[in-house]
Length: 146
Image 1 (tube, helix red, strand yellow):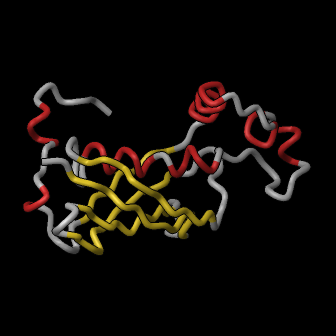
Image 2: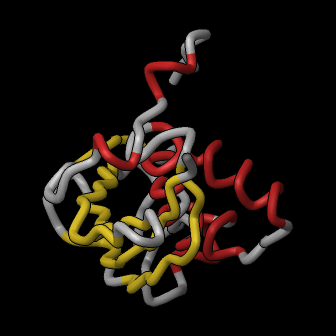
């Protein structure tokens, strides 16, 4: 994903954002992605990194870190909904299914609430796999700077 040189396309005011507004992104998870994330956070659990070990687990194969999958919500908020003026305040997450190497996941955020006084958005956040199965369900609260 390339970052545009003109950041103005990523700036949305609180007033511009309406109930029901959505944003989504998709990404195919690679073994390299999982190893980079593991290195970044120092989580070397072999269920993520060792295919032989992972075969002996309840998953039967390597899986991505749950927080790696959930981190795509950050991209949605920082780049799209609301964009550069958004400040993450909270995120509720329910992990429902594992993300496996080779899965293509789609993260989506939908504005389900607005607090005019505090300039806050409540977002329904979901992550689905390529089969349309719900992998993560949650809710975020975002402040929108002036």
